[in-house]
Amino acid sequence: MGDRDDLPLGDRLGLRDRVAAVAPAGPGLPVRAVAAALQPQGGPVAGTVPAARRVRPDGELLGHSFDALGRRFVVLDHDSERIDGLELDSYHADVPGLVADARDPGHLAVAGLGHPWCEAVVALTDDEEANLAVVMAAALLRPELPVIARVSSRTIAERMQAFGSPNTVNAFDRFGDHLRLALRAPASYQLMTWLESGPGAALPERGAPPRDGRWIVCGYGRLGRELTADLRAEGLEVTVIESGTPDVGDAELLEGDGSDPWVLAQADLDRAVGLVAGTDNDTTNLSLVAAARRSNPELFLAARQNHASSAPLFTAMDVDALLVPTEVIAHEVYAQLSTPLLWRFLREMPAKGDAWAAGIVERLTGLCGSHLQTLWKVRVTPHEAPALESWLATGEVRLGRLLRNPEDRDEPLHAMVLLALRGREVTLAPDDDFVLRPGDELLLAGWAAARRALDTVLFVEGILEYVVTGRRVPSSWIWRRLKPAPAPGR
Image 1: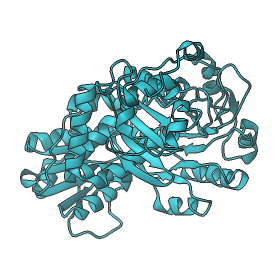
Image 2: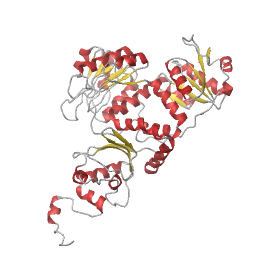
Image 3: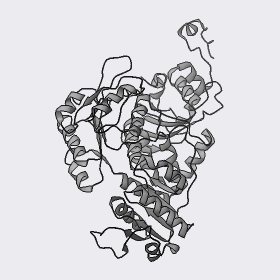
Image 4: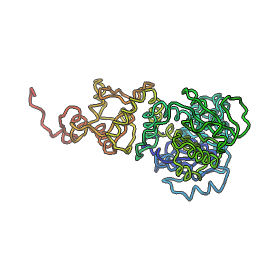
């Protein structure tokens, strides 16, 4: 999607009710179906991307984040007022918008799906059939494009898999995975949350959710079932409270209103260790949290926030874990499309263990302090590292010898490599003796000054020579010509 890989993931992105297709160059907005045209700044249109049906104010944050990276979107929306509103917002480039329905393949084509610079298609509406229609159209018309789609139903997800291999994002499933990670590996969860929040984010506290004891899950809908299965998979006892008539049998399921003190007493709240308020009603969830905290102040409390307007209330309630489905989806989609190496790191990192993650957190805080600095990517290619080209042929390009201060090679750069990708082989946090090969891709974290210093090392042969050998040589052609040849035998 382009070469700029700063990661403004800390933006609180909302993606409810939209579809997007992404390409390399400009701003985008949430809609029900979006095709984004990729265009280098100052140049002609270079690509297209489709996006979603209704443009919501919170979704504009996603557009601004892509705009900051130079991406362009074409927006499809069935609401003409929302399309007109695109002109009122501030972007680095114009945002093309069409009043249209993304489910119509003809509208996607007009938006630019067939353009050679279209890089991806993203379907993020809250209408799963619409998302399926977009996945189907993209798979049949542009089968080579990556597709990301929002789902909450396993049935729809399976139907999507019939059309190529789209990446599906289920916010409830992801939240369950995150909760399991927080229970099993608090340092891994801390590291994941910090990196997802992006540059400038403060290091979150390392939580300590209860690993033993009984949990209460209020609401047995899509989220409740996912969390119940995940908690039981961790060996925890779970009691479910459902106000409606459940369509499945469960020996640990109580019918009733979870905010009713009598129902909570039946669930034996006083001896529980955690409670999840997971209904699709924010008022109900806030009531559940308040009632549970009043009955048992020691409870670990998790809650689901359904609407952006409720955010101040949930913030004031200060729950231990908060699920905002639109933000979970936004973080994942943004990471996959704009920073695939970070996405790969986050996927691979939990397998390394909690002690390993704690060590990475310690190294990062030693380099960056308590606030995350810049994240960026380097490709070991003649284009991005021309000074390395001849040295790579020796097979002796060790990572630690590059990460040195070009002004004083005895000082290490304030940066570390989080991931090295070689073909399909991934190395997390490679050590200083890691030998680079042509084509390697590196994900780094550190200070912006370290990024500039490393760029100098990779581009200027004289600086590279000093960093590697300690020998200072003229960097420019004219000074190399004027420098006297070394005496014989020296």
